[in-house]
Image 1 (cartoon, rainbow, N blue to C red):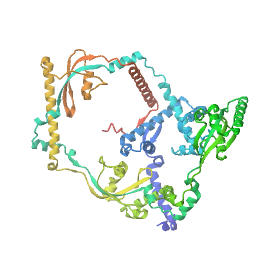
Image 2: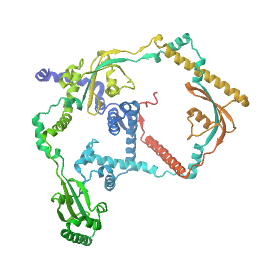
Image 3: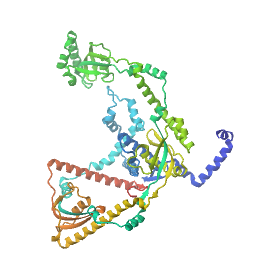
Image 4: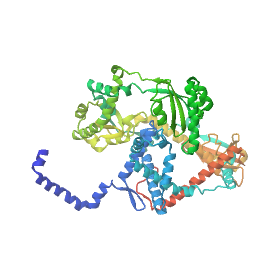
Length: 636
């Protein structure tokens, strides 16, 4: 085919011309621009579009971040409509706050940025013993977030500017204790109540639905008695582990790696030393530093005459409080663990040697080398298994991208079978039966992944039994599958679900009976209060609900307290009915001082949060935010 294209270039150009030009005529250049820009808009912020592609990219990054921080998190939660919509709202918030930064002309100075980076504990951990930043590890940190060091710093700078937007509201929140206590007193106010329950479960024995009633209910509610569509599938998984299985490391490679790295593989040399420190930090005046050096030289002169008194002299004279009590002992350490001048001195000495006066940024040291741990060189055979595993891991990570491309192309080019690509890449064809579009709670791994299930149950896969595309279900993990047998959803015959129907109808009738009797009792007790037979009084409040249903608690707290006692009826839905008699309103129990302080702080935080949210809503209005996709909560 490619030979034909090369030999008939002019013909192919003419054909492409005929295909492309009408497309421009029909859809226009804007259509192509929208396509290349990432698809249709899902939101507008300050006149700018957030595209479907931008949303997808942001959600993928957010999902990977959450997976990295919480490895045991159920993948289904990350790919749910609610999770995706939450990412969109987060993306919109970022755009709105960026708009506010621009409009307010906020900026972050180089000094403020430097201060923020210096106080960051993660970046602090990248500092070397001499205090300098390890730039290689810093670049790796930025790269792990898909950024260059410059991009990382730009993001931090932007975050600091955004904080200025919200700080103006957060820092001005004001909740005087007097006003806060009025709200808290009302919130924690209590009610003395009596509750008569008419529960569905108590009426089940009193109902006996007939077969005719069961059939009527079944006919009206057939959608409740459907067997979901199911499929038997074949599928392939490509990941680092499967690539690793195909890699063979020969003896020559293993031996070469051993020869080049034997010293590292055998361990590193460690040395144990003791020191005496006379403090003289960098900022100390030159006169004081000279005095400190002279003191160290005097101590050294004495030690040269009596080396065995080192520990005693260190305890009396060393100004390193951590080691002085231990006779100056610094324990074992390897290269990279100490200040460079001290380290250089230690690793140039022989066991038992006494150094000269060594200067560092902390002052002046006298060092004694007390022991040397030389690594024992291990044989090739001892290290062979570990070397082979490491080399396989390294090569599989490099090879994965190449194999992933072959996998992706293979499942597409031979779309009616997985066998060729399985044989080519030495992958195992797995099978699964009873697979559903919505996975059971027992499903796990790729068989519970919404992206893969969506691909498997796509029209092309169901109707034509074609391979799905290669679906990325996790970092460095692709899966493709095909349907072998498909069973569409169907209504289960009445005879097969008759018992289930009976349970539902009986529960419905019992609930109706409980509500009827509860409403009748309410009317009777309101008309003749003295006839009311109620359980013992209990005291309810928001912080002590006593496992009371939320409907009952809300009814007790929200009822009109003008005239007490008062009776109210509460519909408990499928669980039945309750009659609540409110006898008294009781004040909030005065809290202990510590508890009161905590509650006042919580109230202040909630108030500040509410003000901040209100401010953000104002910013959204100014930015003229429009969300063009429906919230999953609103579609339920």
